[in-house]
Image (tube, rainbow, N blue to C red; front, side, top):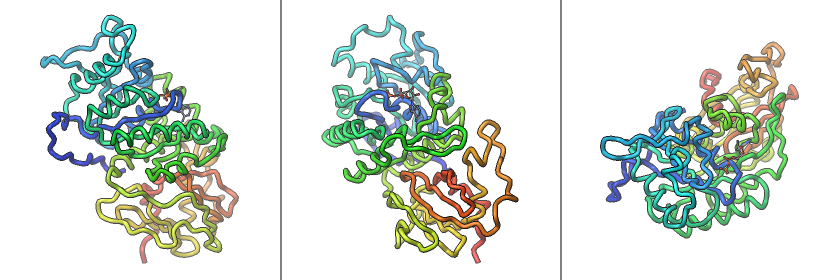
Length: 402
Ligand code: ADP
């Protein structure tokens, strides 16, 4: 993964340049996984080398301290300059209503107080110099969101939704609100998108699949990715060690990292390969993009802009940064990380390479959101999910150019 580079800000007169890019994570309704997404994205950006702060702006129901194992109910210490010291957790800085004692917080928060606390969390905390400040907004499209959007120079917002129609409709409303207050939409994330079977790794779509991508397309905003429903995410949240830290190999952790990579490179980037597609390898039917888009220097390393077939057994991946990667089909099959091929607990390979035919070819290659591809092979295997991050990392397996 390439190191994160925050887009340099124009010199501003807001006095907030030290906060880096301010990204709001919003959702139309509660319980869609917004705080989980905020927390894992903040950690994934930090893992790329960025300095990251996280504001738990959900003043009424702060859940971030629990997810990060931060002690609550203790007055935070003050810096010599009289600012509030944020908590530190897994390398990121965090502030939340949950970190204040009951003496510090009012029993009821009225409108003006909400904005007073939010201003305090952003302006009166000793953040140091950040690349990103992630704001985990409370659910809904009310006062808090408007206050934030109007008071701070937000780089943009990310909308989290689940695949059910009702949730998608509400997400659409959230997008409209952000647009009205002129906050750019960085993209939509579909959470709890399909169920990852803990024993075979296969993803089953319990709800409609692809609703987030369709809404994104219809509103002309980017689709950032689909995070599978994974019971480990709940356990991690309860234990204070988010998935990207506790289970970095889980498919959902790879999606969080891919979304972080898109966000860090994408604020000005164009969208990648058009989805959905279902490409039949043998007769080349439904190939996603007959004319792959050109890559360019300065493009993101993990945005796939084109797919091609060099010969009967070599897949060509064209990345936004201009790199053309060639992968032999057998190497692709051997790199499968599904639970049938890699032991989930130990990470040891279960697949015996001797059982994979030398002449293996794909039958179909299809899109999974815009973060991964699925492949069915001629040996009958079809449960692998190859995220763009994983594919891009397959350097050793690349075919030498001839
Ligand atoms: P919100 O901030 O939108 O209210 P939370 O982030 O608190 O939602 O998540 C609500 C619940 O859903 C939590 O128990 C969390 O662990 C769980 N959750 C979030 N995302 C996923 C996922 N992809 N798979 C399984 N559980 C999830």
